[in-house]
Length: 228
Image (cartoon, rainbow, N blue to C red; front, side):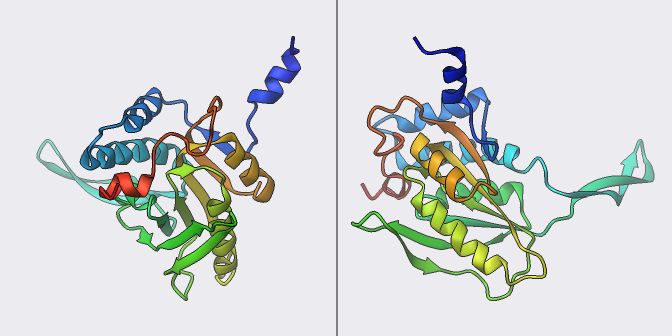
């Protein structure tokens, strides 16, 4: 019989990993896993799930509390003080799966910049960069990487490596964070070992996946774009 200490060690997550406790996340991921789901419904569920996880990933954004706003209160115009996000932001969806998360992130952050990275896992299980549209000039302070499904975690680690080198060219190092919907324990372990300084926001971790080749969402790119 395992001791309470060993049980705690098994379930305790690294400090940089933030797993959503929202009931709707697990509900919507369950719906996404069902076979026979149309590409349209799959995209909609991914959008809704991304919104839920992005709410948690953006709770710490810097903001200003001294923004003047004009209001109309019972027919009288008033000047009040409001709040506005003060950070310059960007999102980087990893093609193709991350594209399904882009609309939700852009709706939440309408002034964000959007750049694209394409990273695929080679037959030798190495992450290969095949597409890079990062701008030459670093003009943001925080970047959210979007990757719906962290299987091995290698592609996400490679994306972080690329962005760290690129982000070092600005006045200040760019803050990088990763947003995912589902992850395997293997991916979480790798990310924590390679980049313990990076905050990872994930909808859920498949702790009991018997064959964690994929965290049960199928081939995300094919299901998103109906190319199965």
